Length: 85
Image (cartoon, rainbow, N blue to C red; front, side, top):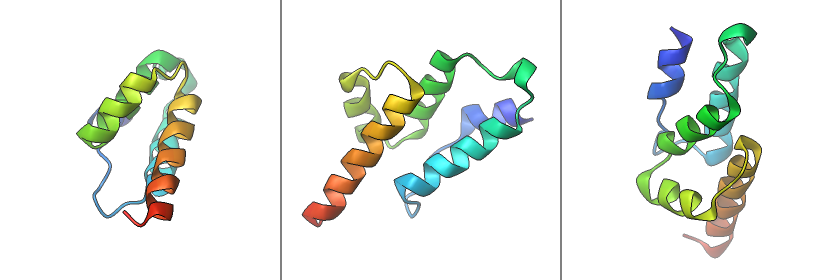
């Protein structure tokens, strides 16, 4: 079931943040429109799928939308890559 898959998703250690977001979005697109969870739930599922430290900082940033949450983690991931971490 796609909803179960969405709720149970986790970012893989070897997966880039952009690849994870693409995978997350693919699952959402496959869910029939009449059963897609509300935006706020999609955002919560997304945050829960991230490594705990990333999720912690993302929750503190208080993104209003799923798009804001995705933008935040991509920006943070890009900053870490640029800093060599």
